[in-house]
Image (cartoon, rainbow, N blue to C red; front, top):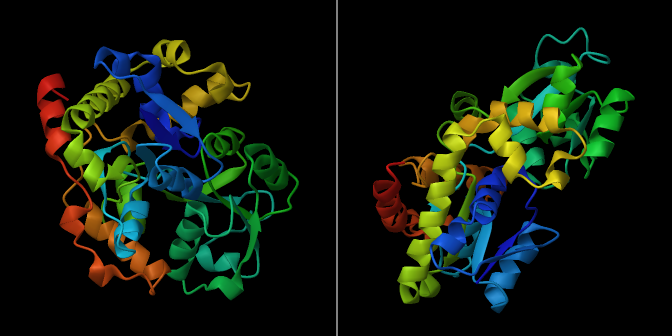
Length: 311
């Protein structure tokens, strides 16, 4: 079985890596290959074309697929907050008093249209700032993001860890909005925003119930492990390349994000509605009236796994 994912090293997909590295998939009798793609769209396309059976990606993609008439369902939630942070530079904006101070400034993001871009737009819109008021600067790699921030080439940044933690530790960043915590995420989105999940076509889940349950069991086992994992546990399990040469930084970022991972794989009650509201905000043309939110996910598998592992 092949699981398609954009970037295994991303914090939001750490439960998938844990399940793989701890042998939880094998323990459930599964032979799982995790295959990386250059972006979520390509990973999703791999499932549609049949070269992968399961998609590890943002829950919002599932709503989009159903809006286009494709029956996809999330069946185990990895993250209940997107782990994206907006912060301002203490070097170029030492006088910062509020979001309106960002008018006319340069703001670094991962890519135009990315989750980081959307979070920045949402937060700034609440201060009355539109797209024309900010200069968005795409910085696709962690190295380029940190370099641009430290050189003063950008005045603010909306990014993920470990970049944010690195800048925080250096005393260079003032956090303005933080979706690594449930409280901070709810302040930004008005509810619980489901992030990474495992999903598959409805036909796959219906025709492969045993495999789907086994996948879910392995993931919920990994999620439970993450709730109590210490630094030495992480170092033993996480591949060296994930650390980007700085174990201490990775561990610090991990401790800040721990709350963002789902404890039991279950979709929160307000999650789909919050995600749909965000989609409608960013793309009013999305055919959300075609989507039955109750069918964008199933908790059946995760409920059984939760009971089994007492997650």
